[in-house]
Structures are given as structure tokens and as C-alpha cells.
Length: 349
Image (cartoon, rainbow, N blue to C red; front, side, top):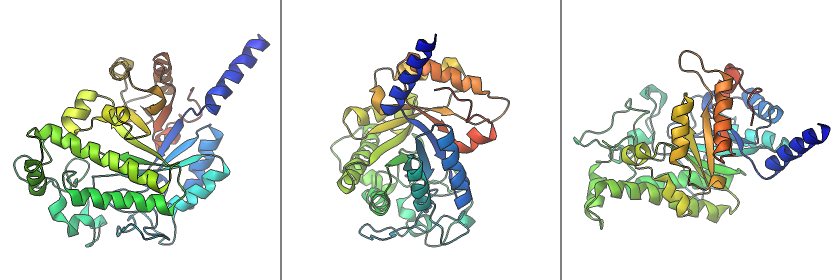
């Protein structure tokens, strides 16, 4: 029996040493003070998490210092409204603290969504106010409202939008010693959008007459360019994306064909948002992506409660389901949910 227990222990150490991901996501509300970041890093360390995805951009604003030292890549985005101390740099502070605990810090960057639902939170120089011509339109020719969906999106089919956002990513990478950058909201808001007049003209000037395919190409192109440009700054930086597990929904609604990103080596890893509460629907999601490279695919589980109850054993059940299908890398959204619901110490990898 003692020999068996030793073998199990050594196997668990081997899995960890071979790079098993055990990740958590920390939102701006969880990380806007030094004390909060101390809690995140300490909780991650105590509970054997090795990656923290720190939200460094909320809605075209900064939880860091734009052009902090090197201003090669223009970044005029203002600091996020949630930061009360104008001198505090959450990203830099988190990097220093995480290195002490051998924890990776990944800059979590929402890409095309740019407004909160309350415009009083943004300034006159915010991208929403200075470049209204970059906002996406619906199929009726109506510009997307600031309080629609998760907020107004810039249109990925506009070259200036892509270049603007690429500079944001490169500015973060060149000024901070981060382990990775994660692209979030790397998509259209839904299938009804993408009809900005500039984007439509670009489509008409393209080599295809299939608008849905063209929209996919815009997202694919952005991911590919992000990967290439970030690797030029730092070959060791990990470039990842948060993606929908439901393939039909990802492609048909959001133009997010992430299997292509993996197959064409446009990205290092994808983090599949498998937030299903039922084991049955969760299993279906994993079955639909069973052929993907498991080394590059991480399963992100729900770690919050919307209504009713969601017990920790339901999370652990999904970990076991994942393992049986040879998925061994996991993430949990979000840190605040892990703490609030007392999940963090009871998760079984």
C-alpha cells in the first residue's frame, strides 16, 4: 500500500513538472490594489495554481502603464476607471509578486469589445468617442450600441482597427516581462454584425464573395499577425486565446474558427470556455473537440454561481470527465468565484 501511494505521488509530480496548466482568471475588480493582488498570488501558490491570467484591459483602457518605458508602439489608451491610485501599476506589481512564487503571469486582453455599458466611465479621448467610424454595424446598417451585448465592438474588418489593437498588444509585450498574452473577445459580437461601411468596401475589394468566410478570415488574420508580431518581440511569450467550445456557435455566430488557428500554428494554446453546468452538455462539448491537440488545448471550467447552487463536486466531476478524454490542462473562471464559493482548496486535478 505504501509503495502504491508513493507511485501515485511521483506520478502527480511528473504531471506537474511536465507543464500541466492549473490556471485562474483575475478580473479588474479582483486586482485593482496591491492587497488584492497579494491575495491572488498567495492563494494561487497555496493551492497549486501555476498560471494567473490577469485582466490588463477592460474596455479599451489600461490596468498597466501604456508606453511605460518603450514607446515604439503607440498606445494612447487611458488608465482604467477602476484604478483609484494613479501611480499603481497592477501588472508590474503582479509580475514581481508572481515571480517570487514561480507563478506565470499572462496578460488577459479583451480585443474588439471597447465600451462599458455606462459611458460616464470613459473619457472624451476614449476610442469610442474619437473613432466612431471604426465601430461595427448590424446588417440593417445601424451602428452597434454601447450598451448592446458586452459593449460596443470595433469592426475586425477594418485594417486600422487591427493595426491599432496590435500596437496595444505589442506595447504590453515590449514593456512588461510577462509570460504570455491571452486574446479574449477575439470575435464578432454575433452573426448580425460586421457591416461597417469600411469593412463592407474591404469585402467587396477582396477575392471572395462569401461574406461569412471573409469575416472568418479577418479574425484568423488578426490572430496570425498577433502571434507573429509578439514572437518577434519575445520568442518565449505564450500567445493564447479564450474560445467557445461549441464549434457551430463559435464559427456561425462569432466567426471564431479556432481549430484553424491550432492546425495552422497561428497560436500556442487555446483555452476552451466549457462553462456548462450539466455533465451531459459538458461531455458533448469535449466530444466535439476530441481530435484537437491536447497539449495545446486547455479546458476552462465554470467557477461561479449565477443562481441556485453549483457544488464543488460538479466541478470535480468535469475534471474527471476531461481526464478520461485525455484533456489534462485546466483553468477556472474566475478567481473571485473560487474564493466566494470556497472552491479553491477543494478542486481535485
